[in-house]
Length: 99
Ligand SMILES: [Zn+2]
Image (cartoon, rainbow, N blue to C red; front, side, top):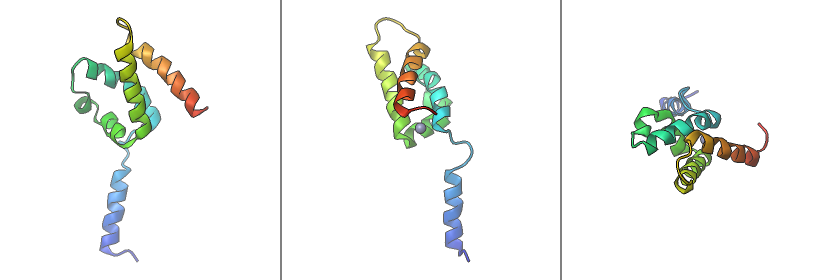
């Protein structure tokens, strides 16, 4: 039998895996838009809280987010975020192996 304390823990565990959470693939899909907003000086975290949430929890995606920002900083001239991200994504996909 579950006692009330266990039920409380269970409820919290379920809450942590609520449906609005992004998977890594979904985070990947949104990351270029997220970074575009950051670069534009907009509050990306407020506009895309699920991406922000995922980045805080997921080291892999945080690394990718950082890599994208770094790539944009070192890029000569203006290259669309999307193009740089497309390149990085191929790199990360290769690194992770086939889906
Ligand atoms: Zn992730």
